[in-house]
Length: 88
Ligand SMILES: [Zn+2]
Image (tube, rainbow, N blue to C red; front, side, top):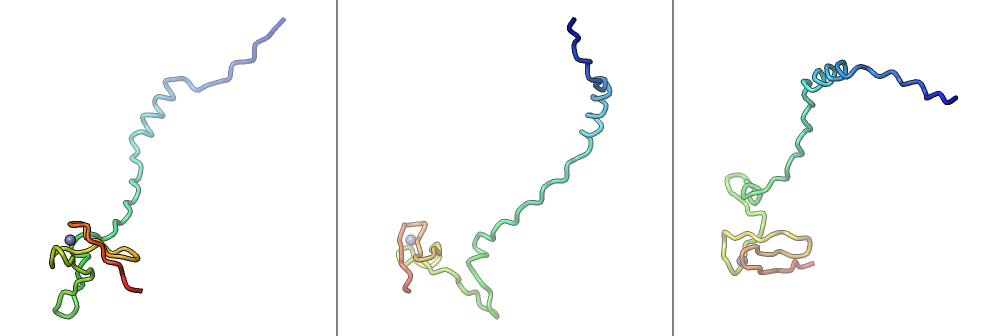
C-alpha cells in the first residue's frame, strides 16, 4: 500500500501569469553609469590664467600636436611608437 506524497499546493498557472505581467511592467531602476575617465584633448590641456598648458609631452618625431601617452616610467607616442623614458 504505497501512498504518493500529497501534491503540493501550487498557485494556479493563471494566477502566476497575472503576477508575472504585473511585475514585468515595473521597470528596473537603471544602474548608474560609471563615470568615464576624462579622455580626449580636453584632458591634455590645463587652462592656467589665459594660457593653455600642455599636460603631456609632445612627440619629438611627430612634432607638436602629437601627444605622448603618459606611462608611469615612460612616455610613448601612439603615432610613431617613439618611447621616451622618464628621468628619475
Ligand atoms: Zn610620434
